Length: 149
Image (cartoon, rainbow, N blue to C red; front, side, top):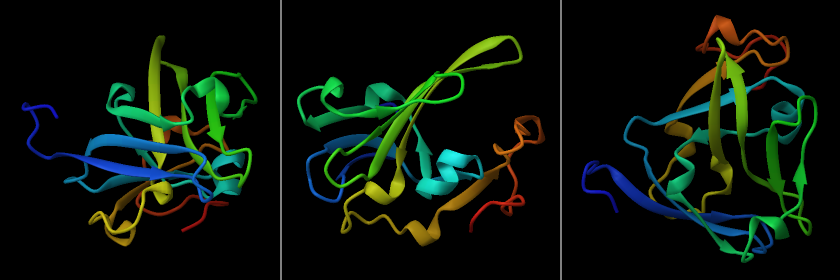
C-alpha cells in the first residue's frame, strides 16, 4: 500500500459465479463514481470507478487473456466480462481528447464484494452523455436523456 495516500484501501471483488476475482487498491474517500448513457454502459447498468490500472490485481483467472472481452466502435476500449455468468467486471483502454491520448481503467463498482464498508448508495455519481458523444459538456449532476438513475 502506498504511503503517499493514507486513504488507500484494498478491496476485493469479482463476478457473480466467482470465476473472475480481483483486488484493487483505491481511495474512496471522495466517493466518486460515474454513469454514462452510451449503449454499453446503459445496457450493462455499469457504475464505474476510475483508478490507476497499476492498483488493480487480477486474482483469477491467471491472465487477462482468459477473460472474454467485448469491443465495438473505435475498438479502443476493452470491456471484460465473465464467460459463465456474464457479469461485466472492468474496462480499460484509451481515447483521444483535445489531441491527446488518454488511458483509462475502471471497475464496475457493483462487482465489489459486500461487507467492505462500501455503500454504493453514498457514492457521488457524475453522469455523462456518451450516447450523444457530448463529452465536452462534462459531468452532470442528473442523468442525461436516456440515462438511468
